[in-house]
Length: 217
Image (cartoon, rainbow, N blue to C red; front, side):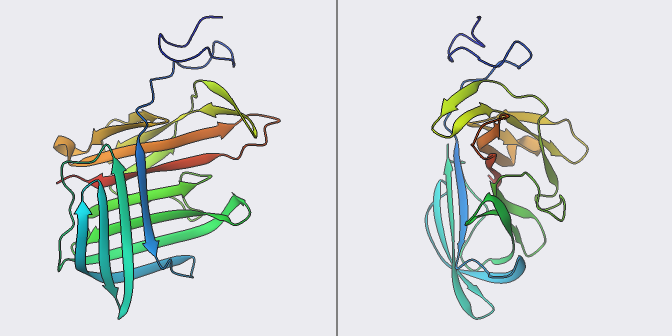
């Protein structure tokens, strides 16, 4: 059986799979603490203090009198991000039950006072929340129709996949599992697909997606 490329191990799912691209081990996470209890919370916040750099940022927030923190980690790190002390932010957090009990699907959007996207992050078993897309506007994410290399794991067979990222009116950009790329006009954003994994029939592995965008301006 021929390998899918000159770097990765042999494919095990047949010749119909597209070739894998080498993983760059992209990492991207964003978390809000404490996480709002309601399923679709919208918050107005002010950045009180800021620590770290664009690749490892901690923001202390005041949201309607409540102290909160936003953690953002990105590797490879963008050259800069859009956060600053004293800035007014609007946050939207969406939480829905996931495929695994106790592990909900979470989508987070952060924008400035003028509505410009600063951050969009998702962790879960699906790309869009139950209510549909729009959480990452002006970008849209879609699960790519093709997958690539199959891997054996402790829970069963899983396959590396990809997501298509599209800026409204533009051509889609495909990011495979474990990769990152500049995105938007003149690279105004960094896009990350840390994980894009789909299970195979008979596998006990849940679907998993970890991906997002951060403004790099």
